Amino acid sequence: MSTSRRTFLTGFAAAGSFAIASPAVLGQAKPRVVVIGGGAGGATAARYIAKDSNGAIAVTLVEENEVYQTCFHSNLFIGGFKSYEDISHRYDALAKNHGITLARARATQIDRDKKEVVLSTGARLPYDRLVVSPGIDLKYDSVAGWSKEVEETMPHGWKPGRQTQLIKQKLDAVPNGGTIVMIAPPNPYRCPPGPYERASMFAHVLKATGRRDCKIFILDPKDSFSKQGVFQEGWEKHYGAMIEWLGPKVHDGIKSVDPKTNTVVTGFETYKDCAFVNVIPAQMAGEIARSAGLAPAGGYCTIDPASMKSAVDPNIFVLGDACIAGDMPKSAFSANSQAKVAAMVIRGELTNARTFPARYINTCWSLIETDDTIKVGGRYEAKDGKIAATETFVSQPRESAELRKENQAENVGWYAAITADMFS
Amino acid sequence: MRGTGAVRLAVLGLMLACVPAEAAGDRALGEYLSSECTSCHQSSGKQVGGIPAIVGHPAEQFVALMNAYRERQRDNQAMQAVAARLSSEEIAALAAYYESLKPNP
Ligand SMILES: Cc1cc2nc3c(=O)[nH]c(=O)nc-3n(C[C@H](O)[C@H](O)[C@H](O)COP(=O)(O)OP(=O)(O)OC[C@H]3O[C@@H](n4cnc5c(N)ncnc54)[C@H](O)[C@@H]3O)c2cc1C
Image (cartoon, rainbow over all chains, first blue to last red; front, top):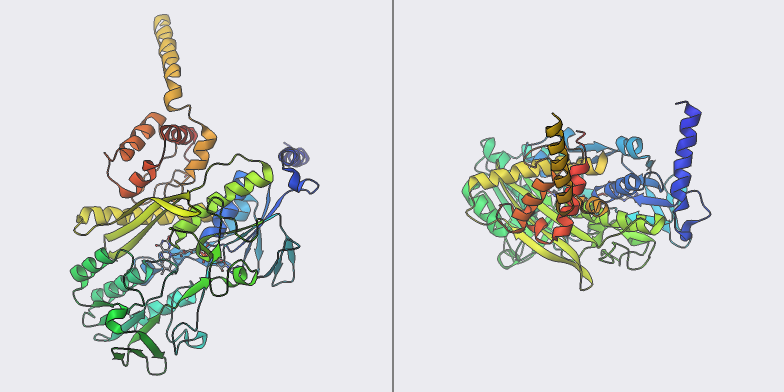
């Protein structure tokens, strides 16, 4: 077929799809969707809108980084189960396979009146619908003595990239007999089982490298944590007394940290000369969501559980860690699931595509030690004004080694699938 | 040979008659519901780790498997949770959709 004929046909196909576009967007070439954030929520949303609309919707993905390092499975990188390359992903295929326009810039403002996103390059991107999935920001003032200035001395590792690498470097430098203190975050935060999987990976590395005399203290502002029973059972089984979890009743409050002397002070005790302190602070919705008025100061965005639409702006959808998703935890699996609901609703609004009742799903696997993986998850629907769990499950104590090994095989398969679902 | 052909046709007719219950599910509904599957089961049909490929799976088998999860006769907490809230119509829709796909790993 000659090029001109092919171009003509493509143009014709696009015109054909346009003909069924809803009246809201008549008079312009194609309805436009802008997505802020190329993570678990944003990349999935951009991909599904572009793929399922067959080019009838123009999709632009705004992402400031060229490479996305996943926080999910970053603990497996820290534990030596994955390479840094294994957890790094690029956006090229989204442009190539689905015609998504990539805007490599930071979104600095959402002009909700004009329906435009302003970029750090000065460009303005008009939208008919906007998807906001910027993840979390850290509350640097939530632990006394800790701040952005000292985040390399006492790393958090709760945002990907250099921070993840710092955690691994610091862990590798801990001498045998050294003390590690992890300060866990208060609810609600990104990845509820994440801190405890990470402590497991610390112990795994220390044990495997002959540093069995090290001690890992988890100082927690919470009275309990995700999958607590099975985590603690696993710690005792694999690591003896290496990991000690202390809730607020025991430590009597996390008072302050001193990065100069690597000291952590609690109401009950002072941990001096720590070999490594991992501060995971309190969290809130990413800056762009807060500055656009989609979330209250220091909080997360309220959404409509049936559509993932922002409660304050019907043209904006908020996904993933930045929103309050009822019973769903802040996980990549959740963000990916929410993105598909939003994509369906958006196609329904912009091209009259068929829509269905929203359903959501999540599973979080956590690796405790080689081939010993636990899981927690559920299925969710819009009910009583929130995203409510209709089914839930969690690993139980004393499960067979075989089942735990199968869980890890699932975990590996899930990672490959979700990253393909986001980036291919 | 002729006889065999006629028998074949008759069998085919029978199969077609049976199809609606299984494979003639609502494909568009199946496609939407499948977005719940693709977080773990790759839509290319590629298999990695312990999660089976389901692309191109025969519809009849697909329905039987999902029913077994729904009735909790097959183990797997995540799959039981998925199946628990699916109606027979939705399972048929998913089965029709997945059967219609060709693996492209
Ligand atoms: C240690 C750890 C372990 C985890 N393990 C798991 C796990 O096993 N399973 C699981 O499901 N989840 C896990 N998670 C959670 C998971 O990483 C998050 O829930 C998920 O990434 C949330 O997706 P999101 O789209 O909301 O945000 P993100 O994935 O963080 O994506 C946000 C993107 O937006 C970009 N961005 C932000 N603001 C702007 C802006 N203004 N302009 C342009 N770009 C912007 C960022 O660069 C980023 O790429 C883990 C997290 C951690 C920290």
